[in-house]
Image (tube, rainbow, N blue to C red):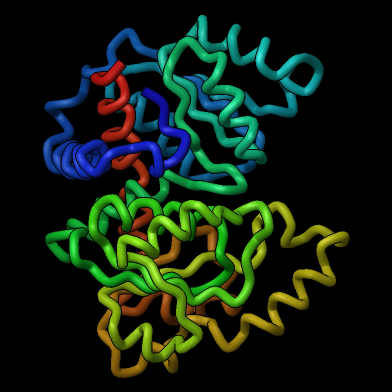
Length: 304
């Protein structure tokens, strides 16, 4: 059982991970040796804090072993990608792959003899959204019927929110003047809109007023933020997106929960003061990446 995209998972698969993640958080001692004798490889082409810590620490707390592989200091940079994946899958029980291209995540799953988890690519970020659903379930007591507005650049996180919403009955409104080219998934968007659980809007204040949750993400991916070659595009985005910043003025009079998948560029997509506002659940959301990853690994191993 792979996790390449939440498009491929059922409602039952997703909700099972959410429920198990909450149970692991509440009763960690029940799961302390569940992965004894099992190994998780973390193959990372992109930098990470939350995904790496959630994978390494989570597997350790489940009684298993984790191995971190920095793409740049392995033979993945020197030889055939699929050959190396086949070899790696002979050594471990699960591969958590954080790769630049979605096509490479697919290629990895095609040849791996063990489950592959997409730890983030240019099109989807399913492990993030499983933890987000867990957080929403904890705070609101449900995910079905929740109204979430995503504000920012239409990116991999936005795609995975749309995919998850269509499966679990969460309404997702997208306020996104710009779409990352790599994140374009017309089939996903059209299918989600047909369910009535996804729509677009240009009216930020109206969307927030109708929302239970307001969610944002960085306007410029971390690997490009300080890149001189991306500077002109960065400035274009900042100028266009400034009216869509989440801050206390935009949120005035609204009680919606505020989410951000982190890391954040404070003063850009979200103000620093809103990060610490009582409505913000950003850091609870971040903490739940650990429990969401543990719930996911348990689910995948039980289904394998």
